[in-house]
Length: 211
Length: 211
Image (cartoon, rainbow over all chains, first blue to last red; front, side, top):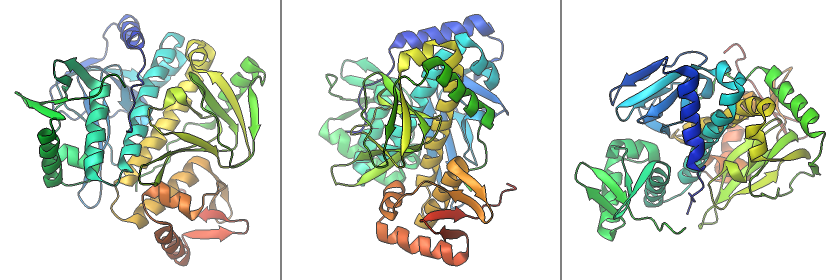
């Protein structure tokens, strides 16, 4: 079991959004449709206000790898990466706020809240690293879906609904495997009853919520 | 090429150390010999003042994976991870400062500097994720040594000296491969002249420093 429930209490999230709304009054707020590439500007970070962005890199071989998912109240951008090539693409219709990185770190009201947000991003990256060390693809897939459920899921009648839609190819990129293998193991997890596919391709994961 | 030179300017590092020294006056400063496990205390982070700590997880299979290297002016600890099991071990004789996480985020003098430090940790984790997606172990090894050289190396006559000592087994854990494979590729990189082994097992990497 790789990911345990360990998120910041939600007050921090609310606090950051409130702070940003009052500090920036929605200047530099940009709305983008799902599937849009987000331009990476030097010395600026994007803060996801609504929606979800994926961060990816690609290799000479043509393979792609997922470096992270960035959800509401989380930052990404040029100052936060040293990977090349580096691409950010919205996974859902999103509102994004563009902020100067030095402004965040020198504004005492913002830097504390942003530190919490940065810690969330770090924990996710570390969890992905732990997952990538699992030998069996099935364990990586189960761990990845657990991570998505805990980080971005909503509790529902049957478990936790993952509202982010990732294709089997995107899951394969995230897990260093092939689309065919993902499809096979997704089927297995559904047969086990651990995973349920709801209308509209939403996944519902049955986590033991008492953990 | 995965890692490009993109570190914060060193003034930030100095600033954080100065701030901590004045804020905390070395209370909670602990000195540990190389190879010591660092106790993880709830709601506290450790800040490396001198030395280096590695973060690892282990699997049911008995395999281990490196989750990160934490160098001077960088934090790690219980609030910054959701991986289980999770272990921190000093790789060199180290001075570590134990700080309450909520104290860092609410102290406006500290939170800005800590945000920069957290961003460095995040960039490293993301770079490791990008490396893990490389198919060929040789590329992963070369990329990992480049990352260590850029993050923690010192320029010297022959290139960049990596002062952290990792065994071939530790490199293998970091790269999801075997000790034997690491030893073979280290030999290859030495034959190429890209890697030089100095007395005392220090590695020197020939990076193109103009990049």
